[in-house]
Image (cartoon, rainbow, N blue to C red; front, side):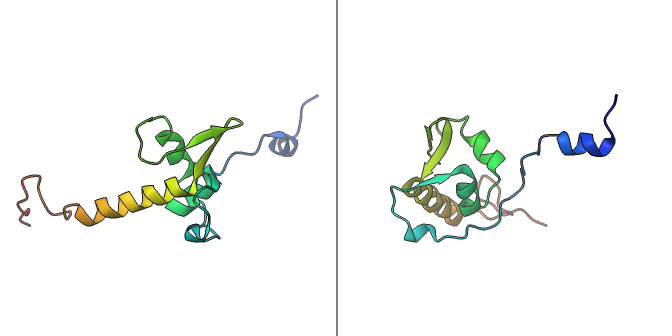
Length: 108
């Protein structure tokens, strides 16, 4: 006896939402530095997808630090703040999009 399409659709495991989470509903600057954030909360704060954080965790030298607690990745608030501060510095000192590696502007 087969299942109807509707029954099969209901029986399937729900898929994770891999898109960009909505902006964080809390102010990271008001939290103690020792607080832990989940990967989804961290993704909301830094405006990246949870999948991006998953890829970054494969690189032990990635500037956003994490640790595993009970098999789940957690991010300390102070580590997220450090990451955001470092990213702001990189953005400010980076070359404009129309610059070449030798510092000469690209002519249109």
